[in-house]
Length: 368
Ligand code: GLY
Image 1 (cartoon, helix red, strand yellow):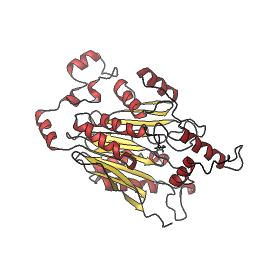
Image 2 (tube, rainbow, N blue to C red):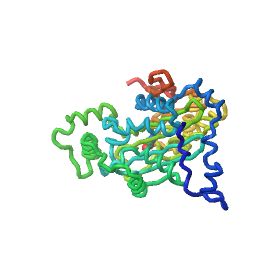
Image 3 (cartoon, rainbow, N blue to C red):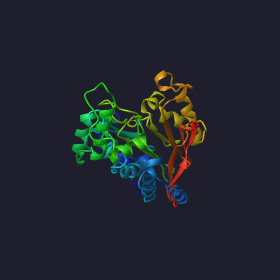
Image 4 (cartoon, rainbow, N blue to C red):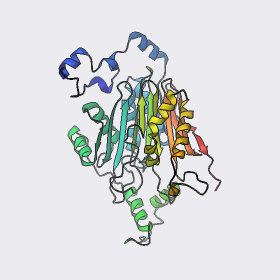
């Protein structure tokens, strides 16, 4: 049987006058999610599952599709899919091995959302747990709340039984220390001997350059029933102010799911995504009839219009940062767009291998 996060009824917030037991017995809490008719099941067998993610989600989309094909709900499949990236110490933008905040502490943000029920769970500034998406899923499944932050989120994760650990890898520690020693000639730090030549530091500078980007994984999924779910998980802006939270744990910004329409999420400069409620905006453009790719581009155009402060604009008045949107509609069409050219995204469908596809874009990068 298909598992859904709604199998566990929420512990409170029931309509007045009815006990939780009565609600469950009456089917009021679970009927919508569990009532899959025989006709729907037959249709599902003909339809395939699909997942779209940021470029670092190639393996994750394959796992998510395999899970959905095995009957796991899209939101759970998405959370299980991204775990492979949260576990990867070489992805310095997510989970274990993520780059820390300015004080050397790894703080993680994540959310997830289930289309059939519109329920969501999220954690922000979570320390010590490598799978924030799984903690967010527990918030969705086991509480009546949506967002837990900081020490409260960590206490919740401990209570649920997640294993606590130090997430700062040696590689991330060296990169953080290099950044501290080189970010200013007016602070207390000076470059250490051999620091610049260190292979991990050189990898970081070659990969990310002198700027301070954000990395993240967003994964949106639709199963054979046309049910939709998604998740976004990140260590956020490299070397951020402690406590800074980006778009990734915010429903409507880093992710939005609507079972009538589809799902959308983002990576890149979170503050700019928050300012236009990015994920929700993409979904609303799809609701109005745009394809996933056209909806992502339309949301980026709105984001560009909302970018007005000079320190975020280049000499031609264009954003000096990047944001990427990813989307899937209920029919299983996928799309992605970025502000600046050169972006890719990952897609997988039932029966096919995961592939990288080029994302649409607003501006061609100037040749170097
Ligand atoms: N989009 C990830 C962040 O801004 O934290």
